Length: 234
Image 1 (tube, rainbow, N blue to C red):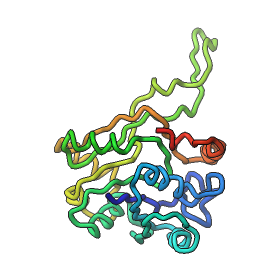
Image 2 (cartoon, rainbow, N blue to C red):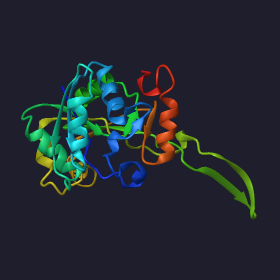
Image 3 (spheres, rainbow, N blue to C red):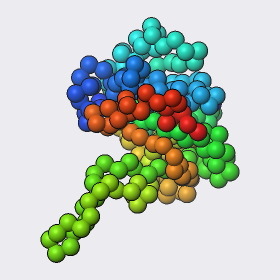
Image 4 (cartoon, rainbow, N blue to C red):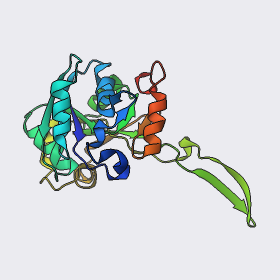
């Protein structure tokens, strides 16, 4: 089963790193986060990747051609600089007619168990499955009474709701739910699937961490020194 990695966005929230490269090429330790993401899938036996490129896609194309040494089957697919996530998925899926695929974003790492994810997807028999995760705590929680702070500390991640963590499984029919390049998978396609009861949610309570800010990049860089790294601990 092929894995589509969405790697074409501008990465504006981490613009300090993305003026000369796309966000998935920001390095975590000595490797781009794109490599770490592919390694999650490869470590669980999925070695076929299509990287959907856009903004500064030539950096990814060149890296795959000249620097990627692993024995993975990786191709870069130019999906257009202004194409949104839905359009990128549509373009790649149309090049793989009739195939079930996995897909995810190029800027978040997780130790999601892919065998369990696919088994769940098959059991519910829906056109698409999204991995639901708890958002990482970013702010301290402040509680007060009569003008005085009574508690200040980190928010418990379990207190937060579930959010879209990527790591999708998509049946070929999903392409019919995306009309144009200018549609976001999250805002346009997913609600259409929901309206027809065709979107399942696999709840993952383990590690998940996006890289939206420099602080989160440094957090992941520090984690990359662990052996094994948390996104490979299944």
